[in-house]
Structure formats: C-alpha cells, structure tokens
Image (cartoon, rainbow, N blue to C red):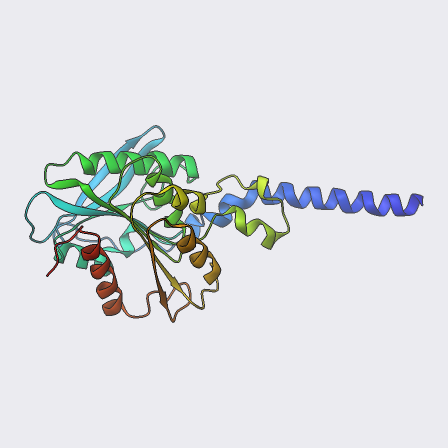
Length: 273
C-alpha cells in the first residue's frame, strides 16, 4: 500500500512539474519569434507602403499601410494579422491585390516580432491592434464603416479579439483555431494553464457582421474541425473549403482572390460589377 502511495505521489509530482514547465514555456511555442528568418530589407517607397510606428505602453510596434491604387475616397480597408511564424515583411506581395481592388491594406506586426519592441501576448497584441485600428479609422481617406478584419492562423486570435472591441464591416478567418485552450488536451494539460486563450469561437458567436471562414481540408496544424466550428457558430457565416493543408492554404491565389472579391461584393464592402 505504501509503495502504491509513493508511486502515485511521484506521478503527481512529475505531472505537476510538467504542467509548470508547459505554463512557463508556452509563449515560446505559441510565439516562435526568435526562429523566424530575417528577410531582406524592402524598398517601401517603391511599393507605396507607408511605414507606421505605433506608440504602445511597452514601446514602438511597426505597421505598414498600403493605400488603394485607385479608389473613390473614402475607401474600404483591411487590417491583416499574420501567422505566428511570419512577419509583416512576408505579405505585401501576396496581399497587394487588395490595393488593386481599391482597398487599403494595413499589416500590423506583433510586439517583439521583427523590428518591434515588447513581448507577444494576447494583452500586448490587443493593445497594438486597437492603436492600429484607431489610427486607420481616423484617416480621411478610409471609410470606417468598411473596415474588414482578416486573420490567418494565430492572426485569427488577434482580429477576433479586436472585433470584440472595435466595429468592423466583416471578418475573414483563414486556417484559424477555435481557441488556443482547445489545444491543451493535445499536451495532456488542463485548459486553465493557457495564458493567452484567444477564444475565437466565443468572439465569432458574438459577432454581428458577416464572417468568411476559409480552411484547408487537410490542415495538419489547425484541424479542419476548428474551421467548421467557427463557421457553425457565426450568425452570418460563409465557409470556403480548400484542398490544402495549413501552410499551403490557399493552394491557388487566383481562386482565393475570386472568393474574397465575391465575399466583399456580396457584403456591400465593394460595389458589384
């Protein structure tokens, strides 16, 4: 009996130590900022990008704004939040089509990523994105009633959190999870240990506007069921399924732009052709 008690006690101690390690190390896993390769400097003037520096409580965080190539003012705008293993530097070329469509594009960096100060967390990201939103909405060339929030992977957490705090015309979620807490079971840990829960499912349930969920059927990082759950919880939702995994979603950018353009026209953010 004493031996059994000792074995159980040892197992409990080992599990407690494991949970403590998980609690302390989880932000290094969720935000692998030190593992991201530094891209070559970009000629921002040549790409018409306006560099912004957002004055947060923990230092300056970078954002890039690409104005519409041609549009009747004020124009709609998209706030984009990238994945956890990326930087804003990776996205101007891929997302420049927004500018060509007459939509402004704001790429917001995460605290502690790239050239930005601070450390990433749900709280610091929320502060950064609120500052970015307020600066964008205050521009005379932007229509604040047509601001779209677009998040990819971890970026879904950033924009869903922002959607609870600021008005927006639509929400686009690509390869996004229900919540970080939902992954706790994968690590055999209780959900209350998650420091940055990013509860996207709850945010989508509360969201009043149209929601576009885009997800790869074979996503090996964020299972397809997460996208299905987000779509099912939306009051005004649309889901587009791609034959793709996580990092190759979308598999065809021509089809992606057709799908996004159709969604923006259907919701009145862009005029119908």
